[in-house]
Amino acid sequence: MEVFRLSREAFAKPLSGIGASLKGGRWNSIGIEMIYNAQNRSLAMAEVAAHFSLACMPEDYVMCSINIPDTLKIKTIKEQDLPKNWRTFPHPNSTQKFGDKFILENKYVACKIPSAVTKGDYNILINPRHKDFKLIKIGHIEKFPFDERILK
Image (cartoon, rainbow, N blue to C red; front, side, top):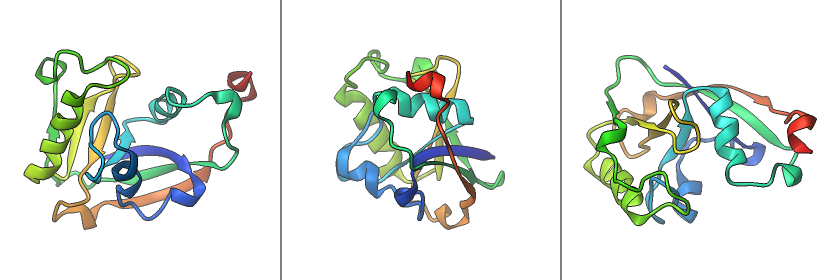
């Protein structure tokens, strides 16, 4: 499976989850390492756009493709399995506890979970603590200029 991650160039590699652990996010608490990815490039962009003003977007963003071998077990979460208020902003603690449990149980290397930003799309959360994490590789990294029409 190929997944996508839009990040500042300085943080594109290595894959670690350290950035998410420093600030926490919708699916992880501070101190819990997790790598956030999207099932497609458009969702990766939408996820970044949801957190920042596009008018102030730095010019050093890159799109990373990440290869997760099809032989690895991935947990799939359906919307009805999520906490009741999972899509609210700011995100509730219940979603962080949900994601923390995924990481701490350490049964799966990745989790396919509905996107709070784009209904019908999925994020892929990677567990860097899992024994099979070493099999996940960055495919390629390329500059990602935001279309000027979006920035205005």
